[in-house]
Length: 375
Image (tube, rainbow, N blue to C red; front, side, top):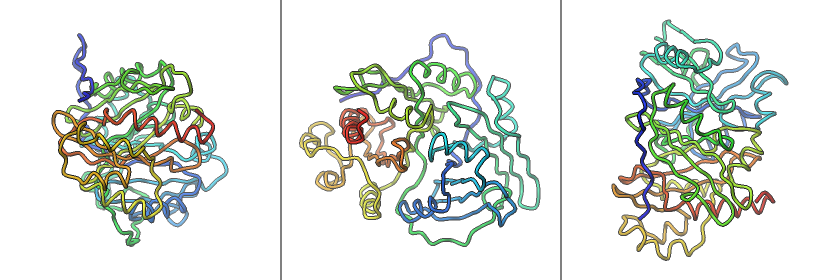
């Protein structure tokens, strides 16, 4: 049984953690926000709940807020040929701009981050009105990605100030429940600096790490550190490419995204088999693994509750740890460039990231790279 490495900081002074309660939302910058809202609604079962655009007085951007259970995504597009959103999409294609974090005191979290060396992005938002209190402040992280601290003290408005509520689009939820983790890719030899950033600025810790021996195939390798708050409900893995015979998946991402950014978003579910079956019925494409993966699955992971034949038909991976096991599957990229994708995960006691699946997963990714001529 494979085990992830757990690390203990060596002689590092304790840094007070910025009190983060969980993920608030993920904001994408996209080329066509309206069409993206249809994709995430009809493909992934998200419901449109709020809108901001010309009709609400915003002359530069349009945003659609999509919700399913505890997962909130914001799809933002540009109404102009220039401006921050248009330039971001021109450079990177569709991708994640903001990883927003729930906090009780946004001003305190924001000020602590700036005092510890973080760079602010935009101005601090402070709304106090009939809808309650909404405060938010953003700081820069890897590439053009930002973290935004969100405080919603008795806020009863439509998502955020400036948004209008939308009558439910009646999308049928499929069982996506909560954000599990968000993974970023950075350039070679840059990960150490970002690990230190999360330690010194956020007071986060190294939850787990994987080196090139853990995550490698015949052709390529990568290293990864998982940063997390003390409660572990916010996990932010960071990957960087390692030397290999051919181009790694991380380097392919960096080449097409034109720099660091969010590689994938993991969404937790309570019952992965019907969720994946429904996603496939709706046209969402997943990576595949050889049938041979399932032949020795009982020997490798032991007894599980699920029917292995059903897992094999859907392509769902399984890995066991000392505290339980997990089931996971990964989509193909969800835009034209081979960059951002999604992971669907169900945890049954396991707290790790499926190390036992790494080889099968990355070989599957490499097969897709080869089809694109990028391996």
